[in-house]
Length: 462
Image 1 (cartoon, rainbow, N blue to C red):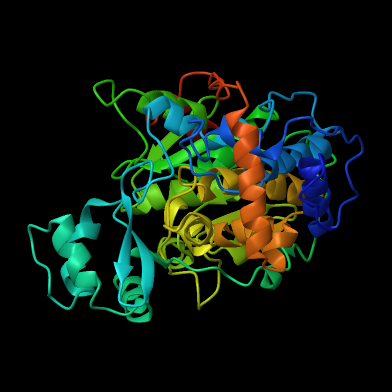
Image 2: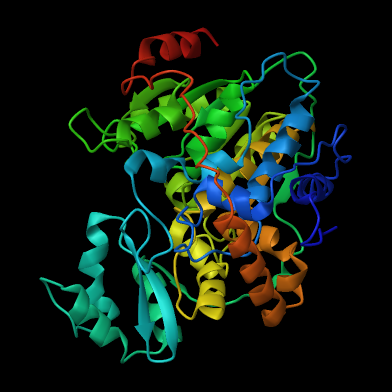
């Protein structure tokens, strides 16, 4: 199922499509939006909101976010008495930009860590999100750049290399790197892979799941936050040696604590030392206890801690394991590093901007993260209601599948996209709408380990 670009049912049709991918019936109560997709995009912040200046993306990204949330609300309708879910999915896409006062639609990501560079035969994105990433640039360029590295120097050197060589070498080094390319959208036949439990068990005797959230930053924590909004008990688990990188203290820039509260308020906090036998044992006990596990680690890293998803799901009928990765589980893809901005580039968003506007630009703020978090919550709740299993949710696949619903992308038509861009630009320029307001967090996120005593007491009583 796909929608036409000129109707007002984008979100509803997309929700139907997502539910069909989970073998679920369509929406039980479909309400069509009267917000034009161009206005929804602009109000969400995915392209900025500067009438006459913003370079728009003529695809219904905000509507896809709304569709994912509509589907989640529908399947949870009869299974929880509590529903504090956001009013719409679209407003989740740009709230970090609003809090941090940043902007998209530039050759540098809104967060400032991901950059678009010209290579010998095209463009690529390199995300230097971690302190150690810059140290890998000399190896990426075969020693042609050295510390201290200036951006202009790097730009000049990268023009000497082919895209394919840079991507291959960069991924081997562990860099988040992606080509500016337009994928074949006909290849995205589904948005998620679910291996249902061989001994499914419907949660008939347990009204709400216990969720253990091992993830960090944005996509996974957003999934956990949405499940908490449905009434689930969510325990955020962190290594006491390496807390979630999104945690900030009161001296950090404006917006960072507020954003962390949005992602993690309403959860309990448990910390343990993953490097000790006792800490690993506590971690394993907690995971065994959980009904739903959310994680965004490479499978190899978890296996090194003695955590095997397949074994744990097989041992507890009904357990759900949600694995959020950049490009999917499996030997060929599970070790490829990716973050929200560069995954969006790989899925074609910057290439579309180049085709339409003549220059590759970023779209949204780490766009794969909020879209992935919304889809992750839908997949996790659905799987829990239907007997458990392992969910392989690749953020790249989520964006690619969403974009594949657009007929102008699936059967690529540049002239129609340019014509749509002109129409949508006129609609935005005539609008006097404002950005969506920022949500209030459920509550302030607890300090690290705040609920250790309570959680350990419950574990000891099992």
